[in-house]
View 1 (cartoon, one colour):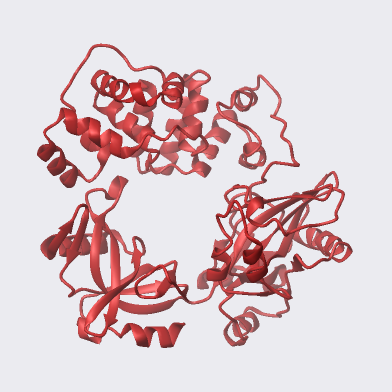
View 2 (cartoon, rainbow, N blue to C red; view 1 turned 90 degrees about the vertical axis):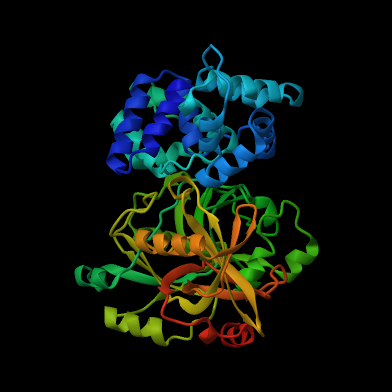
Length: 521
């Protein structure tokens, strides 16, 4: 555990992306298999560790530490792992198992020995190891390392192309010994089962006004950006697998989607619900998501279909190195040969200048199921990740509303010392009804202002939640709003974020919930 704990401690304390890559490279170089592979799996969230309830960990701590002291310390520190690492009172001789063996112990631990094992581990460990152990158990490292960054470090370590690692990533399993053999030039690139393996998707960068200066419109095409979920579809001998953009197999949630295609094909598209290829709103799509068993009623009420964007494989040919125009022609040919009620071809929007496209974006009747435009370079290959200069997303301007700050909770990781998760609401008669939560959109200086307001204006405490004086107005940006029976206000905001602080605005000028519904629903 020592090597693992020192690694994540270094990563946490390092803000530089390049330095994080170097730290990971050093670890991969100096750590043997299978430890480095299991560490990689933990960092990339590719390993499920047996669920040990956080409540059980807190119970163990309360049995060994004064309960009031623990509560006060946890409230002050804001991070459970850090609190336990500092407050644990016992010390025993010995050393913790290596990370690979520790994972095996945690995976197979039973309820009868759980308490004693955890107590022993906490007592043997130093402060850094205790912190790492609790982070490992809770499953939330929050060390500023994304899966993409970890793969970038692998590419640098093995002097390989990042895209080659992305292509095989979802077809290999921890502890990745075949991957490291290849990276160390002691084995071939791992073979994967294309019929059952998700291929990392190509993503777009946000389009900014300054980008138009350097982009020739003749080199690009445009499509509508639909408000569904991005999916990858693998068809082989009439069998279909559907993956989300994160690689989760969601096939069971959409059993009605079928194809008679016998040859293998991999397609990229947007999954929506609706009839005659006319999408319903995102709230309707949510009725189908995360269901392992789908009723006939759900299928009939919210029938699914896919807007096709791209094609990655056809028969035995990998098409990802071909340019967009070539892939589009192949996609159209496949679509018209295999057209059915479950697939619709994404429309290409004709334009002759950026000014013309801007007018189309502004003036076309765009319903709530459009998110804006996708702009794609005609010469672009299909590259996993978010390569610069190839694909752009030009989303609709967000909707905004001024709302009243109601509640706050401390953040996690680097934000554990700040109140950074906020609940906000609108007037509902003479009361204030919450309409959503937001935890991003503000800069560091605005975070300090918000945190100070919460600390100076708390009126009630509910565990970690702080209720504040209803005197602070914040401008909320959001993509859309839907009716919701789950929320007291009757509305649910899509992607709410704090756009700016309105310290200048009195709460009396915040609109009524009924007026908000009339305007946005």
